[in-house]
Length: 276
Image (cartoon, rainbow, N blue to C red; front, side, top):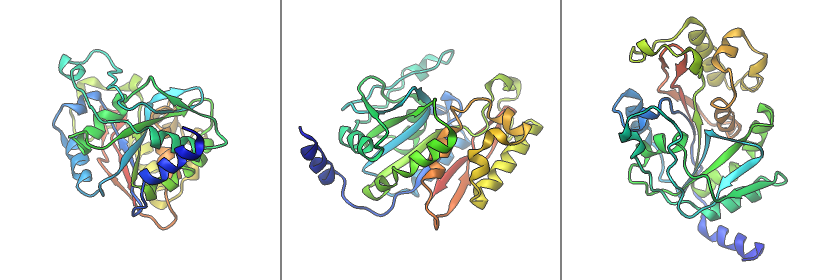
């Protein structure tokens, strides 16, 4: 098809809707995909409050690339991008369809950034391990957009704004990662202790939550300039940048709320964000 036909097809595919919410989901351990716990319950309760989307665009911590890519295949594979877990987790399949038309529209919206239409990736566990609790029947098409690791947090915040038109076309945009995420310091013996965090994790979570609820996003974008607690909470940007995409999509009059707001194993948080 030529470009005019492509765009005509897109305009017919995505009709105008009420503005969809934007989410950041703290996905935590891959085991959340098959376990019953308070966080899974939180995801399911969230799903009850969401309008039915036409499709989902997910920015996952686990697709960190040189440049920006979007999945454009008809049927994305379920990627088991982890090791050392029970066989039952590797057997999980999430057979949601892709949406090549949405991939193409995303590419168009992000110009002049050169976005690659990807036919190889699929849905990694940052996406399917949480989306399966929102839409267990896998009846909503899903595409992923990668995070360009060569770019700054401010770049990602501004790039996210270009996606805002999708919210009025029934597209649910989800960032998936963890705000506090220091795997080297995980306290495995205390993994199941409720809301357990090291002092620095408690400090970082409280400070970040206050910035979020106050709508003061610039210190969060400039996280590398913040306190030692921030540096311990965010030793690498991969799990944090999906939050920046979510914040970039917030409208001036929209409300931001938190859920699943607990620490896990000393050095992780499950804090999740809903904007609408």
